[in-house]
Image (cartoon, rainbow, N blue to C red; front, side, top):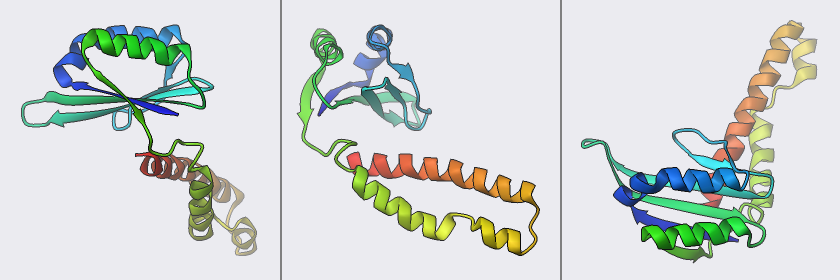
Length: 156
């Protein structure tokens, strides 16, 4: 289940501290990056999409997307917050993260065919174990990044 909260950038900028307090009160912690900001707990996630004017360094629009398997008190608090600040709250009918997991896993299997290091072959070729371990570690990190990218594309 997904809800979108859309508002002008000025509205978000003025009220972002109260938004962050609501997230903290419900146990959501920052898990994102500056490119893809999101907060998450074990069962809920809030992603932010910002439309910025780079030349003027101004936030034009902000969209906050709440996701969870079922409705929660956080959703109700976010709806109340949105109403207070004048944002639009809409139920989003696009697929949730749970609904696209199979497609993402299939895409990752194909990605692994190309990018996963073949440890046995590398050992047979005489590559040092420390290099092989570094290759596997790098592959795991890149695979996580690819998973995030695919999930983001599938749910946007």
